Image (tube, rainbow, N blue to C red; front, top):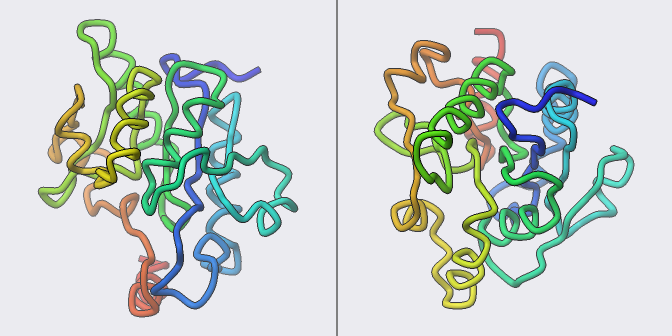
Length: 207
């Protein structure tokens, strides 16, 4: 049993996107010959006691041998995946990452989780989210079970914009300067939404 990172026992890979702008499941895009989701799983399994995949297409991910969680409420965004994962997670908090982020690394994951643990000892905090490029990065952060009822309410009301939601709960935003000390170029937050994004990632994969 792995030692939890400041009590964040569970990691969740969000793989429930509709893939409207990319012609294949983005988690299986290969970078240097390895599917993104397999690389991500390799990192997370070495850090967390529990790793889940949030998906409504379990048949596509079954071969990875990881527990899967389907959306328990209908939603067009990641809030439903976070909601369902929180309900199913063993611990009180989850670390969330999108399936299409090819350059995540253990150091930045550990830093975000440890920040959540430290701030939670002083104040009530529902989420811990890094900021980079003047924007919060909600698909690379920690969420606590304290938000389950508010997620359910937001989804029921069709208010599924995750960045808006973060402004309505007790979110601890990690400053960009703190993030840059570990990941100066923000590579951990690069994601692939379009074919153009993919081409840019391939060009920079060896950078």
